[in-house]
Image (cartoon, rainbow, N blue to C red; front, side):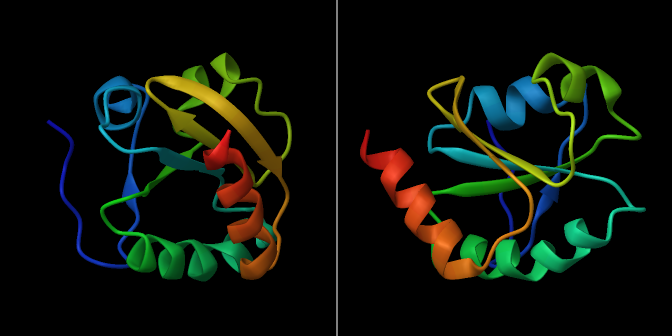
Length: 115
């Protein structure tokens, strides 16, 4: 069963918890592949927290530190940070590379979720 979170809280996932927290989740999950040393990763974090709060119940957002969890980052071919991967029904459906404004990210998410 996926973990519950408070509005706006981005739960961290690891190589060990990825399958349970992302692939088996009952709603689409946007995974933020990030690293502590990545300035754009820190820039997009508040945007993701806002979206997590606004879309609670219809979209889950998780964070995966690529330095601490290289296996999952490798498995999903993460080459640049931040990389956001949208998962639906246990599979990756689209990837966004780089930080972007909230309005653009929401439009891209909505477009991907419509497919």
